[in-house]
Image 1 (spheres, rainbow, N blue to C red):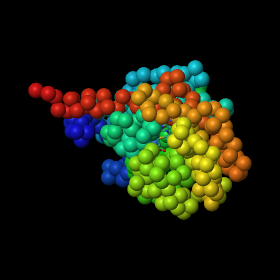
Image 2 (cartoon, rainbow, N blue to C red; image 1 turned 90 degrees about the vertical axis):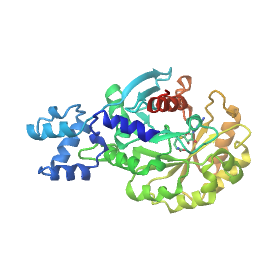
Image 3 (cartoon, rainbow, N blue to C red; image 1 turned 60 degrees about the vertical axis):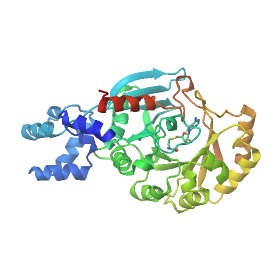
Image 4 (cartoon, protein in one colour; image 1 turned 120 degrees about the horizontal axis):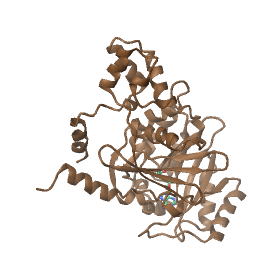
Length: 368
Ligand code: SAH
């Protein structure tokens, strides 16, 4: 279904997004066209630093090269369908992609900077029981260009914000879209012609897609977050189907082996669900599980959405859980669920995925 949508798109004469190219790929294209590969730097600087929208504006390139680039590639922006801003300053952006699919990104104000939470897929295949995105199932991977566009376009839409941090905690499982995510990460953290984000301030969050964790540590120096969410396999099996494939022991062993840069820690996310994983025993088990690791914990009290079968624990229970971890010398921060009034908090992103899928289906296969 999706392939047909994309083919339709291509056949409508769209030129490929240049942001999908790695520097090596653009250099190869330049070489094939008899142009020195060093022009790659200039072109990407125009795109990622100077925010150019048109090849013809790239005044330090020859006219002929500009024309050839324009005839071959495009520098698309995402179509903004809706922007909502919450009382606490959190903004949620709904984007419409070129095939009609939708994704959401969230800009979160912190004390002295802003963090952008971006999506890596349309929908998600992980099927976590407490996550709204999971309800619509998986639709498709985002391209590297679409991932980068969320950052590039929002920096431009919100120029007065201090965007220093990016987290892959929106829709999708980033490690299940490995190649595109890593190519995007490289451009985000590239220090010469890329977006120049500090690797430490870019965080990839995974549900525990073990086979790609080691690769991420080898291919990049970005920060890693792991959504643990339970301390026993029986509970984690129920909450996160990925646990059947990569159970706690396998996941924690992968964390132990992870090539963590010297002064860094792995962040473990733990969604607190009343009566499911929020007991003092859970807190003690969690501290034991993490003891061999350089770890810190983000406690995320469940963010409710319509039809959800879970509840947020009472405040006292959340604080008690945190206290137990801190007494065991674990850094544990409670994530306050910013943007809850506009459904922008962790795990609430959905962009009405099911509806979009139906829309895409009817466009690709119109009923007679
Ligand atoms: N697939 C990746 C990234 C997307 S989810 C992952 O699993 O890490 C980002 C974070 O939101 C995860 O830690 C997840 O456990 C959490 N989350 C999902 N739904 C939530 C909800 N309803 N309330 C609170 N946190 C939620």
